[in-house]
Amino acid sequence: MSVYKNILSKTHFDAPAHWQKIKTIDMHTGGEPLRVIVDGFPAIKGNSVLECRQYVKAHYDYLRTALMFEPRGHADMYGVVLLPPFNSDSDFSVLFLHNEGYSTMCGHATLAITKLAVLQQWVEVQEGINEIKIDAPCGQLSAYAEVKNGTVERVFFHNVPSFVVALEEQVEVEGLGAIQYDLAYGGAFYAYVEVDQIPGLTLDSSSYRNLIEYGMAIKHAVIQQKTNVVHPFEEDLSLLYGTIFTGKAKEEGAHSRNVCIFAEGEVDRSPTGSGVSGRAAIHFKRGEIKRNEAIKIESILGSTMTVEVKKELKYGSWDAVVPEVSGTAHVVGQNEFVIDPNDPFAKGFILR
Image 1 (cartoon, rainbow, N blue to C red):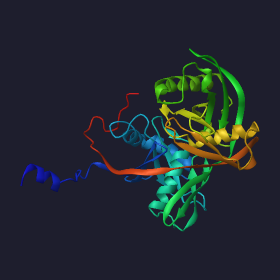
Image 2 (image 1 turned 120 degrees about the vertical axis):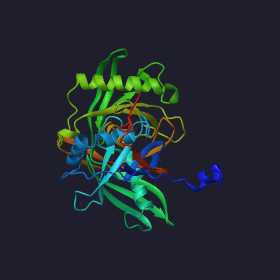
Image 3 (image 1 turned 90 degrees about the vertical axis):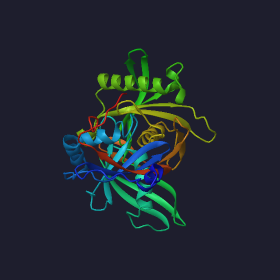
Image 4 (image 1 turned 45 degrees about the vertical axis):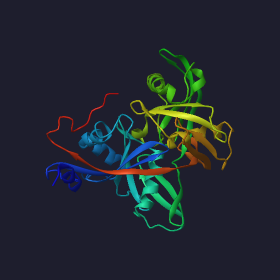
């Protein structure tokens, strides 16, 4: 047999039994990656999602870095671990992973995992609207997949209560001077900054590196100078996740564009589901949108999510809203990653 024929007959790599094997299904929502870990992750202990998150931090953080960092991932990779439900009416739970640690909320992942749950028939699927309840670190999410003729036509979710912490605050940022921002929560806390405040900065790929640099500088300045990033019920959720730059839309019919710089300088390729939830709260508080008035928001790639306020309620001491967020997600592949215990880079590495 020729070498080439031998190659064609032996295309599967059989890893030694003592190597760790982890299977994933990879997706994207509006261009933002999601690595769904479906098999091989060790058992996680905890009586809530937040307890499980702490357990993974303490015992399995090397798997987060192995799967998110190079050589298996990259600086902007994102992942999700699936867990049993903790609420009696939930279907399953999720932990979100990224280059810095573990998110409190992720809208793009929620949209993707909702579609995947239907495609994989993890849930009973029917024509029309299928509801899936998901326990996330920030609380229970109600997600929906609309199925027509067996095809997922639309996915959307109702987020946890979202609220405005402050409008038109100012912070001094080294190299930028005084920057005005709004602070809001949409499952995670963000500082929202109008991009026009920074000369030459745009909301497209030409400003990619500057968006990271300025976004991180603003985030750190807000953290250092302000103390009002406090969740009303969970101390573990009281952290500023990122900076979201906002500006004019490029396409007709879109309301605006935003670019989210989160975690350790990750750039969201999608419009950011938790981010547009916070924006809905901001626009609603300012009287710029009404209940059930949908706005379409672009990402750095021009992909879009639609958000609207579905409900008003009190959340602790905050006047909050429940946003509905919709977008599109796609499967791009599946992997079986292996971890060779003798590999010096088994736990991954990152250069940015």
